Structures are given as structure tokens and as C-alpha cells.
Length: 425
Image 1: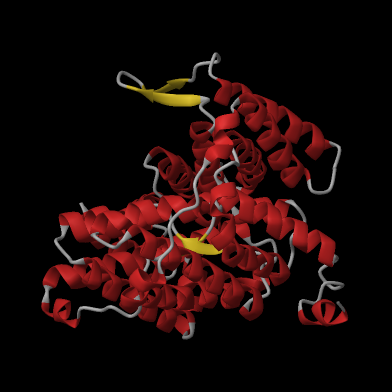
Image 2: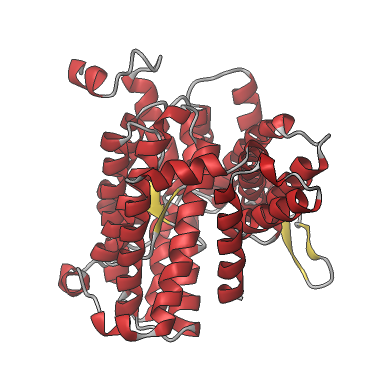
């Protein structure tokens, strides 16, 4: 135990092994849905589902270990929602790449991302982002977390006329969400340690009582025989395709700025940003090698930090649980979306505090920040919101003849975002 204290510097972070373990446990149960969901999405490229499942688990486990040991940060890295859709529906279905070529693009994007993080380019990029936009990213991510939580909990549903509307209060799922939300708010305001984990457990019990059929899940079939051919299965012939390089460039832009935005919003200790940024880049090389879509720093990491997680021990705990999930997969399905939804709603609300630091009195600062945090949830895309925020900021500074306030590197990035949007659109 003393070794863990010294390795992760628990005392200097004012935390304990118990707190870190509970934070890791909470984060894992909140993010565990990614195992099934990511596998389902990327299997639509032709990758066998069983192989995709193992690729997701091994990538998440090793990425979390990397983040925990390299950066000592409580940030979970998993194959990302959004980028997995980009991998499947854009790179493979729309652009015509094979899944082998898409995996090659993921690995190459990871390498380019890594070069950026281990050179002055990382500092160059980070210093180029104005404070107002950084705060806007955090608020936007918080709103997106809340929006996803409302969806998961059935509190908002799709509507043909208005896009979204209020859910049906007669649905058990909605009542469990409201029960979980009320319980979590009470526990949180009373500063009960492990409030998120307690909510997950009690909500799961309530869900099982309401619908015992939840516990009838069958273990997912796992086959190492199908997975081994997936390892390092690249298609170098794709290097001669223009679409391959467009996909690689676009994916790299998405990964760099989505991870930057997430880390700016999720890290409580900003001094850990460089190492955490490097870990997130290296994990993408592993993702391609291990046979899954690109990785990102998970939004759900906020549940761990809000549970008291301060060090990499939180992340390593979650990473170990990913490996353990090989035998727990059928039981993870018992956790109701309602419980996860309540946690995401509260975490999103906590992240909204950053809006106070945005200088809305200055139109050239306040409006781009607003565009950023409005576009992130309304487009359901972090990189899209960041892109429009950058472009708006650049236009306003030029229009106001205040370009000297902004480094030239910022305008270069804004131009790249315009190109990226054009290529993707």
C-alpha cells in the first residue's frame, strides 16, 4: 500500500487509496456501456463482433494503464462515441475505405497526434487557444453530457416537429431516472462519499425489482480465434488513395482538438495536461494496432473526479475493471441507463460553473464562447462546436481590427478548421 501512495503521490493530492478505488469503480460502471455499444458500431464495417468486443476491452484497459502511469491523471481513455461513428459510417461506408484501411488510418492519425504532443506543437496549439474558448469548451461538454443524460434517462425523446420533446412519465425508465436523480442530488448536497456509486447500485436494485427480466442476459460470445487476425491488420495499399489521406487528416484534427477540449474541461490539475495529452495520443496508436476505432478521453471521467479521484490510481482501477469485464459482461448489462443518466445530468451541471469566467461583456470573446458551447450539444459533436467557435472568434477579431490580441497560430488553426469542415461536409 505504501508503494501506491508513493507512486501516485496520494498525500500531495489530498486523497486516499479508498477514494481513488471508489472513483475508478464509479467511472468504470458509468462508462461500461462503451464495451457493447462501440463493438456494435464498428462491427458494421465487417469486423466480427466478438473480435470488436475484445479489441474494445483490451484498448480501453491498456489506454487507462497508460494514462494512469504516464500522466497520473484520473482520466479514462476509451474508443470514443462520435469518432467510432466517423470510423464506421464516414470512413468505411461513405468514403469507401475497407475496415483494414480504416484501422491503418487510425494508427497513422495516432502517430501524427503523438508527434504533435511530443514537440513544441502541443504548447503552440494550447497557448493559441484563448481562455474564453477553453471555458466555452468546458461548458459545451457539460451541456453535451447533460443532453446525453436526458436522452439516456428518457426525459427527452425525439419529435418530428420539434426534434426533441419531454418524455413519457408513465414509463418506468423515466421514473427510475427521476428517482436516481433525486437520490444523487440529496447524497451530493450532503457530501456523502461515493454518492455516484451508491446511486448506481441502488438504481440497479430498483430497476431489477421493476423488471426482473434485466437479469436474464446471456454472456457475450468471445473468440480469441477470431480476434488474433485483427491484430495489426493493416492495408498499406490504401496509402495511395486520396480518400485515405482526407480521412486521416480529418481524423487527426478531430482527435487533437476533441482531446484537447476534453482535457481542458476534465482535468482539475492543469499541470498534468502535457502528459495526459501525450497519453491520449499514444493510446490511438494502440487502438489501430489492437483493432478498434480511435480513442478519446471519456466525458464520463468527470464522474470519477467528482467522486474524489485525483490521481492515476483512479484510472488504473478502471483499466483493471475493463479486463475483469471479460467475465462480467452479462452483469454490466444490468446497470440501467437511468442511473447513468442521472449521474451525467449532475456532472454536466457541475461543469456549467465555468460559464462565470467567460467575459460576455466583450462581444469578440463572449459570442465565440457562446457559439462553442451552443454548437457542441446542438450538433452533438465536440469537434464541430470547437471548429465553429474558432472560426467565429477569428472573424470577429478581424472585423473589430483586434488581430494583434491573437497569435498568428490561432488564425492558422481556424483556417485548418475551415478546411476540415469543408472536407467533412
